[in-house]
Image (cartoon, rainbow, N blue to C red; front, side):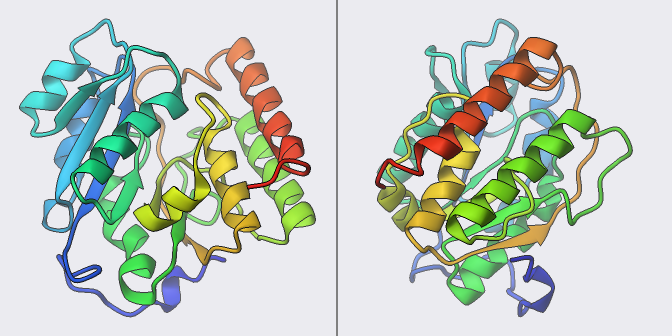
Length: 248
């Protein structure tokens, strides 16, 4: 893992599978103050479509996303994973070959996207995690409970399945072929860890690249509250132990 600094240079817009189609899926809930900034920062030469899945926002997230140039889908059933699944279905229906997942709170740096997809485009990896742990984090961008939770989950995955991840970061790139084998299911907080566990159990070719991370705009819906932190922690641990016995 963490082999990004050894990759060859890939010019923007390089063909993938003979036909370039990289789609970006952004699940969003009340991100009106940040979603436009996220969309504007995405390197467009490499991206065929930006898909914002509005997960029941009560502000003008959808309007801003649409006027910023994104395709906007509505998913009223709440859940991070549910919104991602809606975006995946649209991307596959429009012949996407690689899907990049990105949060709508402007904590990630969309400008890092070319480095994120490079292992897939150039070295035929199946999945690339943008790791905040080996990248540069703004002080205070990740709360202590988030850092510990990442460490614990990644340690357990290494012990149980032998894959060395350092982060459960949401900024990641996956081939559509790999996603179809994974048969993603989790509708909420277990989404990222489910994907990494299934990648490990399926013996997919995975790596990590360092990405930058800053304080998000607004309050985190997960680590921003005690209830959210507890709920996410329980769900992540439940998902890990569940897949010790559940086949993929």
